[in-house]
Amino acid sequence: MTTHYEVDRSPLIAEHARLIGAATATVADPQVRHRGTFGGALAHADPAGDLLAPALAVEAEMVIAGPDGRRTVPAAEFFVDYFTTALAADEILVEIRLPKLTGWGAHYEKFNRVAQAWSIVAVGAAVRVEGDTIAQARVGLTNMASTPVRATAVENALVGQPATVESIRAAAEHAAEGTSPGTDSNADADYRQHLARVLTGRALVAAAGG
Ligand SMILES: Cc1cc2nc3c(=O)[nH]c(=O)nc-3n(C[C@H](O)[C@H](O)[C@H](O)COP(=O)(O)OP(=O)(O)OC[C@H]3O[C@@H](n4cnc5c(N)ncnc54)[C@H](O)[C@@H]3O)c2cc1C
Image 1 (spheres, rainbow, N blue to C red):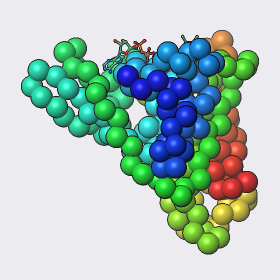
Image 2: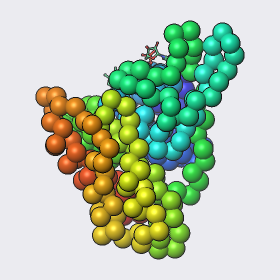
Image 3: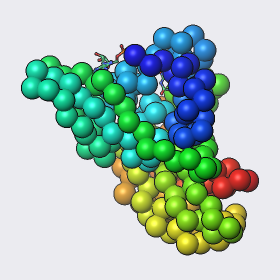
C-alpha cells in the first residue's frame, strides 16, 4: 500500500535505501506516483518497470502472505518471467524488506525518449567507496531481459578497483553480459546492449560521487 510518493519522500529511504528512492523519483509523473505503489509495481513485474532492477540489486526480500501463512522470497527468486512472479494466485505481497545500504552512493540512470515515459533501458547502481577504492558495488539492469538483471560481471570487475572514471568505464563494458533484451519499436537488442554499457558507466560514476 506504500505509494511511490511516500517512498520518494521517506527520510528512511533517503538515508538507508537511496537507490530505491532514486529509481522511484523517475517513475512516470506526480499523479502516477501518488497512486501507484511499490508493492503493486513489483507484483506487476513489468521488465520495463523502474523498481525491479533496484530491488534486485539491493537484495530486497518479499514477504508473501497466503492461506498457508507467510513466506519470504529473495528478489533473485521473486521475478520469474515477463509479468510473472513467485506469487501464487491466492497470495499477496505484504512487505518489502530492504537491507540498509547506509552511506552508499546510488544513482538510477534512465534512458527514454520523452520525459516521464517508461525506460527503454535503465541502470541502477549503488557503491560503497572506502578511501579511493570501490569496496562494494551493486548494479541492476532494467528492460534487458524478461526479468530484471543483476550485472554481476560489472560488480566483480569493480570491487577492489580505484574509484576512477577509467576503472568504472572499463567495468561497465561487462554490462551486457548475460542479458537477452528484446527488440521493439524503441530499440533493437544490439542497441539496448550498447545502452546498458553506456548507462552503467554513467550510473556508476554518479553513484561513486561524480
Ligand atoms: C501512465 C503511467 C505511466 C507509468 N510509468 C511508469 C514508469 O515510468 N516507471 C515505472 O516503473 N512504472 C510506471 N508506471 C507503473 C506505475 O508506477 C504503477 O506502479 C503500476 O501501474 C502498478 O500500479 P499499482 O501499484 O496501483 O498496482 P495495481 O495496478 O493495483 O496492480 C498491478 C498488478 O499487481 C497486482 N498486485 C498489486 N498489489 C499487489 C500485492 N500487494 N500483492 C499481490 N499482487 C498485487 C494486481 O492484482 C495487478 O495484477 C506507470 C503507470 C501509468 C498508469
